[in-house]
Amino acid sequence: MAALDIPGAFGQQSINLRVPVAMYAESRKSLVSKFMEENSGPAIFLLKGGEQAMRNESDHEPIFRQESFFAHLFGVIESECYATIEVPSGKSTLYVPKLPQCEET
Image (cartoon, rainbow, N blue to C red; front, side, top):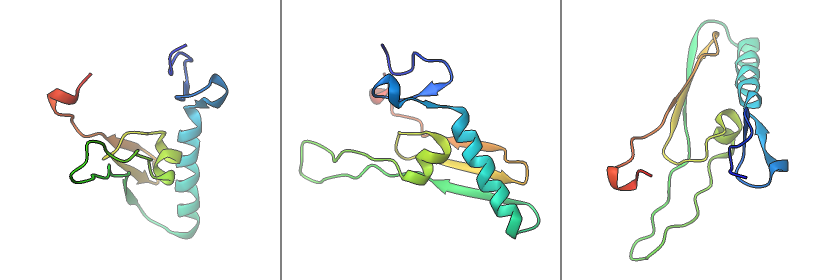
């Protein structure tokens, strides 16, 4: 079974480890609510995901691990991503870098 065969779920491993996509939206909603409890007025969160480490003079790169907060809020496992969350609306936008044509699959 392919990694994304279950509609509305995300995961790479066993079917038992798949996470409902709605969980990420709930996490972002909770973040906005907690922020609004202590702050008033509009705001925009700008979040930066993890960066792929480079190793000089080597034939391989270290294994990439996404920043925990970013994976928890967006479910993204790719590197070099950014995201914004608007407060109080909770509207979120994910910015994924354009891959060079030689890396596209």
